[in-house]
Structures are given as C-alpha cells and as structure tokens.
Length: 240
Ligand SMILES: N[C@@H](CCC(=O)N[C@@H](CS)C(=O)NCC(=O)O)C(=O)O
Image (cartoon, rainbow, N blue to C red; front, side):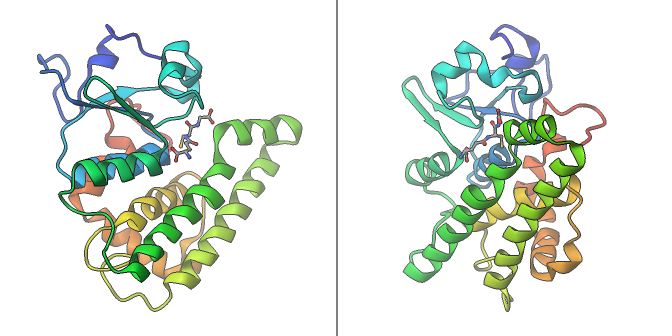
C-alpha cells in the first residue's frame, strides 16, 4: 500500500500531480486494471462526484497491507471512504451506497422488471464471471497446472457468462443494455467486456449485442474517464 505521504498516494483523480490538492470527501481505493474498481469509477464519474484516487497495487500485494486490511478485511479493491466515518467495501455495496447518498443520475429504474434486469446483470457479472478471474484464483491455477490451463479457465468462464448475457439481452435495441440511460447493469457489463477483449482475448464476434454495447460505452465520457489506462496508477504503456 502506498504510504500516505508518498506522491502516488497523494495523487488526485483528474488533477495534475504535484499541484496542491484540497482534502476530498470521497476517497476511492482502486487498482487501475481492476474491473470491480472500474465499475465504481464509472458511477463516480456519471454522478459528477469528485474523489481522491488511492492506488492499491494488487501486483505488489498491497491489498494485504495491514493498513488496507483495516478498511477491507477481505483484502480486495475497491473500497470507498466517505467523510470521516463511512467505509464501504465491495463494488455492489458501494454502488448502492452512492445511489442512496448521491441520487443524481439514478442507476436503478423504478420499474420492477427493469430494476430486476439490472440487478440480474450485475449479479451475473459480479458472482458468476469476475470471481473466476481474480488474481488469487489465476495464480493458484497457474501454480498447480500451467499458464495454458489458466487461459483455458478464464476463457471458459468468460464465454459461459457472455453467452448467457448475450441471450438475455438479445433483441435489445436501446442505446445501453437496459434503456437509453446508463444504469447499474451497464456499470458491471463494460468493465467485464473490456477485460474480456483487452486482457483475456475473447472473440466478441460471438456476442454481437455485447460488442455493440461496448462501442456505445466507449463513446461515453463517464466510461472514458474511468478507463484503466487513464488512471493515475496505470503504467505508461499498460499491458491490460
Ligand atoms: N465482490 C467484490 C470483489 C472484489 C475483487 O475481487 N477485487 C479484485 C480486483 S477486481 C481484487 O482486489 N483482487 C485481489 C486478489 O485477488 O488478491 C467486489 O465487487 O468489489
């Protein structure tokens, strides 16, 4: 974990490093490449919330640093700190907290069926796809088997999840997955699609609806601002 006095830890989202920064109310502990952090960055951006970016380098195991463990005993990013006394961990919980606390640009529709569809998409990505690609899981497979089996494992789970999502969204003609406004489901979908394409070599021609949505997300400023390679802790030529 970057020490609180390090230049890296002081770097603030959207700000020129080195400039004096006012204390931000919201702090996001994030890793540039983390899809779970990416979800929250999109929401913060959509809701127009300024925040301090606190980098946690997962490749250096900073999530296991005792200082970070006090914030999130699960030792995962993201974690959100709001003011002096609110800590929320787990991207789903953070998104619902932001929704209740900062209602501008609502993430959930009122209509029960559409609300359920959003939660369903979020839950499929969050519970049935992303956990299979976590570093701890991938490292274990690589160690016990080999790197090819690791790739097979990721691609199997991503293709399984994408096949289900593609079927669920078949016939979707709206700009985004559940309407013409960005909603919760979109915040889970795009980081997973992005990782599938950039990091795990998934062929999106099998998923025309997801591929079309990906194009739409890439044109939206909130998604652009949240992109992994645009984060302060991304390496200069990032290999996603
Ligand atoms: N359900 C959690 C999962 C968080 C999670 O898996 N975070 C990953 C990055 S996307 C992580 O911190 N991995 C560290 C590790 O595997 O040790 C959430 O949605 O926030």
